[in-house]
Length: 89
Image 1: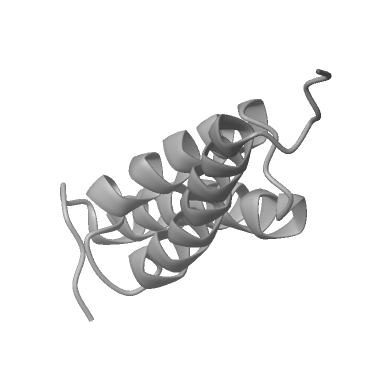
Image 2 (image 1 turned 180 degrees about the vertical axis):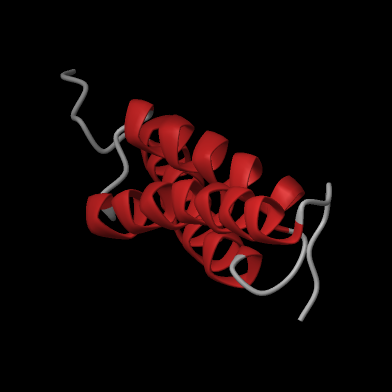
């Protein structure tokens, strides 16, 4: 009896990693508008874990990683222009 790459444990791990990739993308996108101090690092962490676990949605994970970094850049730039710890419109 030979084990294949599609054992139930492997499918579950891949499915979890795919969910993390999608979640990182959504949180990174949402973080551009609100709570970027919290959502940016969470998006970065989820994307990193998804890529480390071998997600099949690598593009979505990279977008989540990029958007998470963009969240922090947006926060820093608005903080710089407002001379405050937070920003608002």
